[in-house]
Length: 73
Image (cartoon, rainbow, N blue to C red; front, side, top):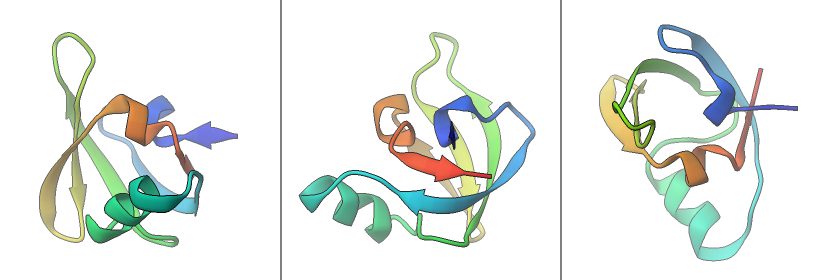
């Protein structure tokens, strides 16, 4: 299983499934990260956290802890 955390800079991935439950999953979905959406990994902060993503035409910063719960292909 590949997660968003494992995606490389410059790579575009598609979300397959969101793991987790409750408020965390709801917050991720509210940011536009839902099943079937393409996500482009723009860059990663110098110390590795957070990641900067392009989702649905806007820029989004996401912690690696949250990215680990997003399964991609």
